[in-house]
Length: 288
Image (cartoon, rainbow, N blue to C red; front, side, top):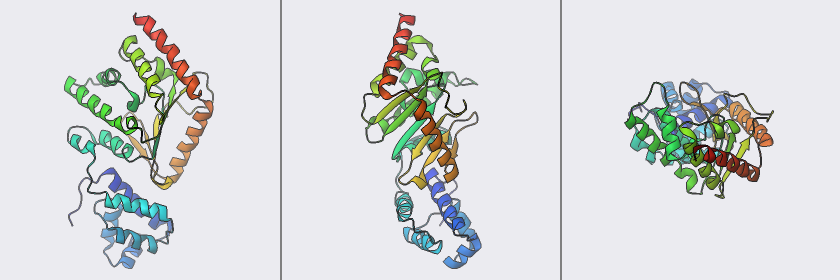
C-alpha cells in the first residue's frame, strides 16, 4: 500500500490515538511490531497516519495494548470505515490553506461545539459583510478574490450549526460586540444576526462583560470540539501563525475547566440577548 503524503486530520488523529494506546500499555514500537508480526517501520507509519489499518487490526492492537475502552475503540473504528467519505471542504483543497480545511474537518462530525472569542464574533455566526470585512483587514492585504473565497468558505461552514443538529455554545466577550471592522452599520447588522441566531434551539449565545474577573488570559480564543467520546475531543485555538490543535487529555481537560470559568462569569442567554440588542440600537443610532 502506498504511503499517504498528506494524511487528513482524522487520519492523523487515528494514528495519534494508536500511539497513545500503545504508550499507555507501556509498549515500545518494536514490541508492538513483534506482537503483530510486522516491521517496526510499519508501526511508525500507522501512528503517523501515513498508512491505513483495518478495523480488525485496530481491535488486535487494542487487545495487545490491553485497552478495554469499547466506546473509544468503536469511535476509532468509525474513523476507519469513514475514510473514503470526502467532506465538502475537500473541494477547496489546493485553493485554501490547510488551516481552513482542518477547522471544517473537525467541526463537521462534532457532537457539540463551544467557543470563546474576545475580539470578534466567531466565524460560525458571522454575516457575509462582517466576514468579508475581517478578511479584508488581513495584513499584508489580501487580493479581492481571496477575500471572496475565504468568506464563501466561512459561510459554508455555518451549515454545521444552521442545520440544527449540532449544539453550539458561543461565549462572546463584550469587546467583540463593540469592535468595528467596517463601520457601525456592518456591526449593527452582525449584532442583529446574533440575536436571530440565539432564537435557534441548538444555539446558546452568552456575553462576558468587561468587568468579569474570572476569565482566562486575553489570548485565549478557542473552539472546543466534542468528539463521539470524550477521549476524541479536540481544541482549536487561534494564533498569529495559524491554528493550534490540542487533543492530549491534559490539554482538553484544561480547556473544559476554562469553559466552566467562562460560563460562571457570563450573562445568561436572556440577559445576553437583551445586552446585544442594546448595543445594536446604539450602533444603529450611530449610522442613522
